[in-house]
Length: 275
Image 1 (cartoon, rainbow, N blue to C red):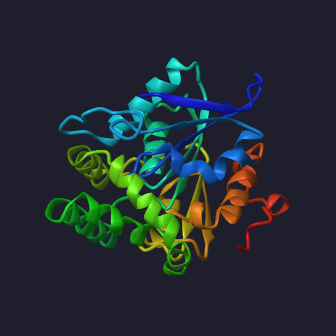
Image 2: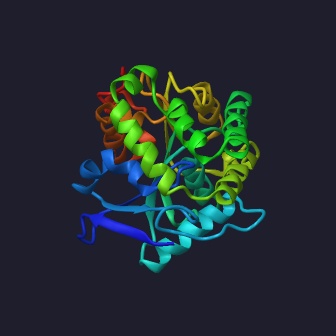
């Protein structure tokens, strides 16, 4: 698995690793790169079996495998400590790394994640899986934006979505790879391990997320010893794309707090508290 490094290169620069969701592509984070590169060394990567990291995933592929693959890739590039920012599946990778490689992971940001799979999210995944198996790749790809973006944003960005559909069909990760990654995602449950994640964790959720109810972030927040929860009112599952300005402000202000454990102090309350 190949990772790309960019941004600040001075020795004191912190490293921020960006991990995408089920699509697996590092390109998901394009709306965040410019802001992050000004202050951090930034790592993006295509997850194993997707995009520029082609491979055939094995049976029994797991979240622990995803975490180990990223940890190994970071070690090969001399990275010994980092913050992990992950969207949905990518956020769960960050939590798994915090458990398995606590010396490597300083902080985690989980965007629209969960403690254990919600019944509604399971239904959505079953619908997407059935589309892939019974109708085909094009139908799966065409349905994907419905789960990612708000209806009003989709209405205003049809040309963009159609162009992305074409690219996503051409660069589709493969049916078997996607199903194995989806199974690993659905099988992940932090209910018995979340209390052991002592690193600071920022949870960002969108209250109009169609795929993952925002209440899942509340449940995860309650289970983590050192977590901060922030809510966006609009933006859908991929609000880091649809409302990148608000999202980037939330992300950067939290990352820039020297001691995240003190972030709940009234003296350090970020300006986006009321968004």
